[in-house]
Image (tube, rainbow, N blue to C red):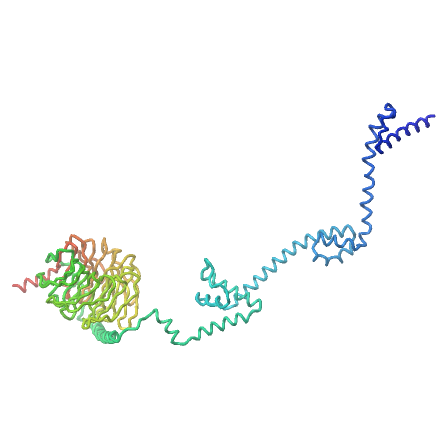
Length: 571
């Protein structure tokens, strides 16, 4: 009976469940009291768990055919991995199914890393080989040759912001690349083009190379160079003969002679002061015999004065602008004047105009006669100095070389050399016999205004706006001594013309000073001017020094011994 009741109950339970699963509405017709707890507990569990058993059996069963490796599985492996990794299929055949999957995944990761490393190594090796091949190639060092080869190779000759070394490295790598690619024909063709360009006619090559360095001169310049060479040879022989005599003659006491000259220079006193013009004075020069003095002023007028009384003899008028310098001929009684009207003029002592030298493109600065008296040198703010023939008035030489205006000029006592200085802070020495610039002295930090050769033949003095006077040794080609001479710009430098035992400098600090040429110590300070001293000159025997200034005065300085001698002559 109990079993019947249980079956009846179970049947009653199953019936509603089937009714629920079928989605029928007959559930409401059954007895709700015995069925209510069953409907709450069991029906929701069975529908949820019913599909679960069907899924797990389907997962492990497809694993059985994996070792067989059916053809349907190959596309999956190709899609998940790289096609190039298919060479490792033999390794999967020897291993089990689980190890095959793990091994292929691990090998996939290692192969990617090794591939990247292998690519980097190959790239680095290629770069190393390229650099070695490039280092073995011969690349031009001249930038113009590098550009020409790049052009022949069909490459741009330059890139924005590219410098010379970068351009050369680019050509080197390009040549190495062509060599590595086997394009030697292109490279050889570029070499042939270069050889063909290098095999130009000799005349064209000489023309291109020599054109910037020289300009063909006239026959008059050639004759002048020959005359200067002959003149300088005889003068140099006399100078060397005199130097040997002083060295070898036991009766010659050089130190005593220098001491006597310095003693005379140290006894210089103001002997005369004269108003030279109504405008500031700019230059002065003694005649070769010391009997006349020439001065010039900013009004363009030059005047001649008798010495030592300093009395006016004649007036030279002809310039339309201010006169910048004046010079007496060392051989004849000729006077040359320079002016800001771009001309230089030649006068005689009577005041008659003899020649006018025209050709400069800017105002003139200083002027000087050649020791032979046949030639005249002028400097200008057009960055050139020129050499003129006194007899014909012809321009023999137009000399460039300074980067800024040329201011001072002087000639060697032998006549073979000329020296110029300018606003580029340089002093240049020129060989008049060949036209070459043989020396360029660098040392001044500001424009150089005064320059002078020593009668000894191997010293050159320069003074400039850096307030220093420098002594240069032509034999050693360097600065011998630096004199901190003045507190303002040095306007003029002059050696004593006979033996060069002392040196005189004029300055804008309103003084002129005398220095020993033996040790370059100060000997005498000539004070008396009330404005900047623009120029000075020394008479042949060193007894007088004349200075001119912007205070419009001419001051004559004489030694005490010369004053006594003059008094004795008067008595």
